[in-house]
Length: 293
Length: 340
Image (cartoon, rainbow over all chains, first blue to last red; front, side):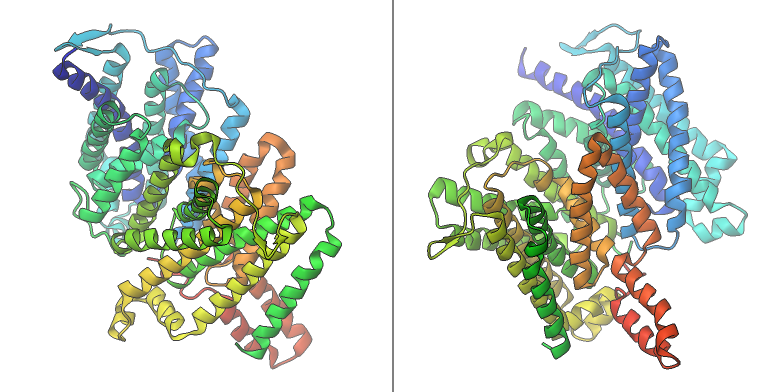
């Protein structure tokens, strides 16, 4: 394989994992826009989605149905989390929701370790497209699923936010909470819905990525933090930013792992994160003020 | 130092000195030693979070720099442990200075995530740079501390060393906070703009506190390394410990020095207690954490102050409420509602 093929191979791998980061980053963005909260438990939705799918698959449920059921059940957990632990925090300083969502993350992490054990569990890849070769580089079937589902989810989200009443209400609430309240939008419901939506996106990411990296109780922490880094890279609060940030982070990380060192692969994401924060804290697409949050 | 404060520290010192007579087992003494070591980290972080109003989700990195600095300098270069401790604290402070300049320009979530990212980078480097840090298998045989032939080589001896350090640093924190700089810091917490119009060099002061709090964490790390004599990159030097430190500060009470001790004691003891429940400990810790933050908005010290406020009027008659109110005001963190 020449340098071109190798680079292309890294690029595909980067796009695949980048799509996962993008989905997680979108989850962060939706909750942040609805409530101003950064949900540190986002990665645990990914983990729950993946482990739930593993359990369903072991019970004999077809894989496609596992995906659908996961994406339906995990949002309920997201809504429950919001109702029980986030809503009582209204009006508290920025540090409080950070700690509570971290607490939620530790809690879910611990419960998952109890329910599913601490071993990494495999999940079969979704049936369908065979491995294809593009320009000398291999693109696996599961990668195609990830790219396709990721794209589909983004388009669906776009339609939801622009074409439906609820989606528009969520956007109005993000732009101006008091204004939204004045025209009869219930902010409590919006925040709960945002937790449900991001939990769904997280679960989707989890089911899609599990066949590649296996599912385990600890998988969510790093994916969550990387997704957050992607959201910051694109500009916290911007949906296109989250997508571009996720893909960019995935590709950069993949190249760094391939050409520099795979051991320091995870550090790359955080070095990029710090550079963005120091040089352009508003991110690639962000216009928001970075102070005074 | 006021007479009343001196008295309270003497009382705490006496209590710490007598404690081993009650709790005689080396296990209990080691748990108490960890409480003191963790309290030092919490005290430093409290200066940053509770007084200057800045968040750090990466303090485990400075703790790690202190521990690994001591470990590497003593085991690989054969340096004297005390000198190694001084060097590693100075090194951690230097890193804090360099990283603090760009980082402290950020606020709120951005500051939180920047410090988190820094902490992650350090913990990844500790794991990957095996030639220097021993990688995942860690560093062993870190020597004990000793003064003129007296080695701190038992749990009891180290207990006194750790608690001595902790109490001295508590008194130091209290004095710093009562100084001109401390008042300027509180002003920053309430409003950076107002503070700077009063002539406070906000950026410089924030940086100084950041460096000081990194120094506390590094000292605690170095003590840990010389006490346990073995360090490895898991739990204690990564993200989980950064969170634990923040939780100690917030649970104990932001901006309350005794609160840091209370927070460290509670979290450290809780960790030990929950261990008995085997695999349930992580889930229980997460749940307790969420509930505690939701129901104790001003931390344990704030809750205690409110309790004493509620009880006072019964015993002391008419004049009591005003007095109790002043007290509660003192105990409550300054400007709870204005983070970031």
